Image (tube, rainbow, N blue to C red; front, side):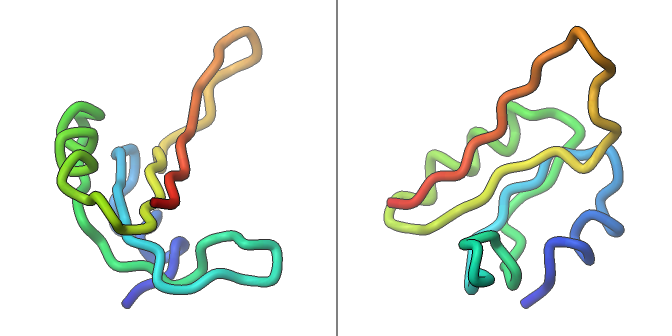
Length: 78
């Protein structure tokens, strides 16, 4: 079990997929289990397809794009 911050430190500038084990009072993931990480987003999407029935959180640990760019983040609760 790890925290989101620990994951972000370990896997800089990567896409990460984790299973959410616990949340805070705002329903934000706190403790998680690493499922997959990669520089290539498609790799983590492939792993996500195998996670039916799991509460997962998918995110990018790199720099947030500059103004004028859009990014979509996805939280799935099955």
